[in-house]
Length: 319
Image (cartoon, rainbow, N blue to C red; front, side, top):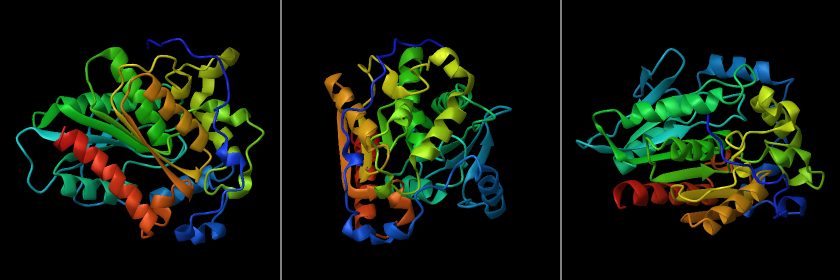
């Protein structure tokens, strides 16, 4: 897998997560949420619960096997066009948890509202399948999507949340390297981009929810696996390490100020802008990690969803 040179290791420059940031007034329930959920001790239990609940799975999604290792959940709009735009969606879960069905309601809503095909990829998880396997699985799904006869390959967006957002950012870089597919948008919701955040000692965990520094260390350690032998982290494994961001598709990046990923996401957005990539940065004061899913009815969460939807609509239907 071809890689560009990586920039010198350094922590993100913006450090708002170290400050005492109050929670957004519409997210008062945050104070009752755990600071962390996923770690080495809870992972096996969480995986069992995910399988037992079959959370989010919808009967109106077509499950397609792309190859022996990769499958996708396909959501088609009520009135498909001859050459329909599409979104490849990548679920979150810290690289170690989750499945293609967990965001099914979101995928169905976007397919219906925008009249596009949404494809959620079932990529293999770490630590059993460390880098580059999850990224390669996402590329396999992207290539399959671009070759479908009912899809317009010139109007494909890629997106994801959390770890899925980090994979989407890496996928944009990989697609640029290979030159086969040219996504028109990378939609990154609080993406997991920089393994170097795990070495920071200035982060105050009191205002973090759901994803903590301990979870972050576990997730990155699981994903990087042998790739970190000798201290070398491939830039495609951690997009924030990638030096040359020029020529990437336009980006939409959204994150809250009480999210562990805030600083690295803001830094990445600024670097994209400096590289000439059209980038929209949507920062939500006082919002924690995955707030829009956990408190979906809050007005601030609906606004966040509307901003994502508008970015997709502009890139796929009005561009």
